Structure formats: C-alpha cells, structure tokens
Figure 1 (cartoon, rainbow, N blue to C red):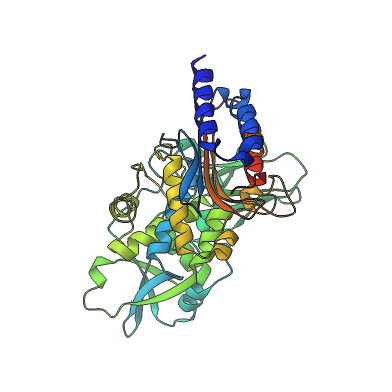
Figure 2: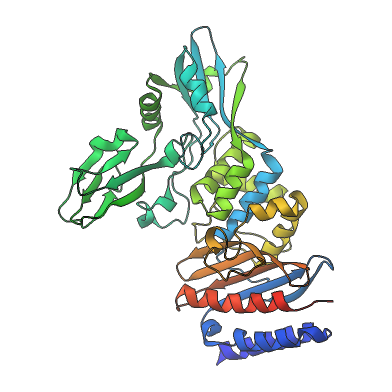
Length: 438
C-alpha cells in the first residue's frame, strides 16, 4: 500500500510539472500507466529528465535519492579521463643506460590486449638490443576492488587490476573434442591445466593460484576467457615469453635518480573510452583510473586518485557521490540520478556531440543497447549499468522534433527479470522521444 501511495504521489508531481505544456498529455497518460505498473511496484526507481536547451529539469522522481549505479559509474571515470589524460595513452616510461633499458608501466591496459591492434610498446621492447629491466612500484593497489563479489574471480569481467597488464590479464582457453587438452593463449599457461572429473564442460581457476581445472565431455567447441592471478614476477615471465628475451625484475625507486625519463605512447584515449562505454569493459575502466593516478600522483592507486578527483572535478556536485572503483563492479558505489545528469552535461561540454555519440551504446545498433528497439533513426545514446537486481541507463535522448535531452533512469532492488524492467523503460523513453516539446 505504501509503495502505491508513493507512486501515486510521484505521478501527481510529474503531472504538475508537465501541466503547462499541452503537448505532454499523451506522455502523462503513458507515465501514469507505466510508473504505476506491477513491474516497478516492488522496486526502487529514480528518474531524471533534463532539457539541455532550457537548462532545466523537466521530470524528477527520486532524483536526489541514492542508487547502486553499476556500470553507470564509468561515466565518472570517463569524465575524469577527459580532464586528465589527453588524446594519447602513455604505454610505458623508461630510461636507458649504455647497456640497459629500465621501464615501468603507467597502468595502460592495451599491451598485447587482443581488443587492440596497436603494438608500439611491444615493438619498442622487442627491437632494443639492451638488457631489459621491468621496474615495479612500491605502491600497492589491491588486484580486486572494494565491494566486488569474491566468487566472480573466475569471470572475464572481473580481471585483476595490475601495474603492467598483459593480454588484458586474461587467459583464453579453447576446447575442441579433437584436442587432448584445452588450447591456451598465451601458451605460457598450458602447463597450468589440470583435469578434474568433478567439473562438467568448464574451466575454473583455483581461487589463490594460476591452476586451471577443466573437464569436457561434449563434442562442441567451447571458449573461455578467465582472469589469471597477477604479480610482478608473473609479469616478467610473460614478457620474457612473448618478447623471446630475458626481462629482469628491479625496483623503480632505486633506479630513478637523475635520469632522463622518456615515454612511449600506445593507443588513442578514445579507443579505450569506446571499449569501456560501448562494451562496458570493467578492466579498462579500472586501469583508466590507474592511468589517471600515475599522471597525477606518479603512483598507481585507485583509492587515492578517487579521493583527489572527488576533491577537484566533482566537489561542486549538488549531491555528494560515494565512489569506490572505476567500473561499477562494487555495490559500495552510490550515485543519484541528478548527479549522473550533471556529469552527462559536463561531458557534452568536453566532447563534440557527433564524436561523443560514437563512444556510447546506441539503441538497436551497438554495444549493450544493441538488443533495444531499433528505430530507423536512433534516439538513445547512453551507458547502461547492471548488477543482479539492479539496472540503470543514463545518457542522451534525441526527440522526434530534434530536441536533445539528458536522462538518468535507475532501478534497484527489483525481483522481476531484468528484461521486464528494460521493456517498461523502453516504453517510457519512446513516449518521451515522440512528444513534441515547445
């Protein structure tokens, strides 16, 4: 009963806000139908719609309440990257002596990552005739984020954070019935496979070790991408294996005094942003925060850089943000729809609209919105965010009359299938799209 009263009150407020515009009658009718539907009745829903031209909020429901944003937090990571990183990503920093080359990572996630074709850092390290030394930082960063689900460690979306990512910190396994054991890439992990009769058509890594247990009984080809446990020692082994030359571990602090430090740049920043936003790549989001940390603080630390960013670029938000990771895997993140609209407006001030819309999922076309309604003219350019029982969508909506709106639609604590939530959200957003605003 209390839920229905709150929904009715929210609907009444929305109607008052829209009453001055006769063209919104159809929208009011649809909102009345959808916002009081059984789909939303048992969940906690927040919605905010902002008119860019008039610079005013048109609709707000629970817009200053806090929600678990999931991957919507990537919009904050994106904005921070725009403010700090520039156009190109530094891949490594290094200095040379007469016979040695000492290098260290910036946190760049693109090195030997199959999602990127660039090989500037690899080519540089491969071509040198000097002895290679990989310098590690004394500053430690936990490989998994605060508030992440520990039992997701075997899933590709939970790849560990590290100083020098290699292969996206994932090992690829392919199984074919013609093979005697799964084929691994990189091949370094071939000796880490152990057959386990208790498993069924899968591969699972041990929690605390790079031991990969498998068992297959079907005839079909199966492919897995599984995070490996990272460490500086493993990094030099993987580098030595792929470069076909020895790489030695050393300490960064003992090598930097009075040195001429240089940088090799790897990929365009936009290539990382697009993968993070369109495909919702958690690993890239986490490493982007480390890249920002390296540039600002000369270390790789998620916690300290978030504190810095909150005290600078996000200190003037109307609602305080609770921000703990770059990807949104943590349920400790808490954001309001109002804050997400604020950030989306700021992002649009940093990136031209045409370019920005290429970096975001598009309804019926790309990324995490590919399965949404596909109209002849796309109208939603937005970042989705999903955890179990949570789904949010925040971005830009282009109306049929050509007006550009910003919206944030957040849903937490529902018990119906996510597909039902998305279906109802689509109905509301489509109605907003079809209204001719003055």
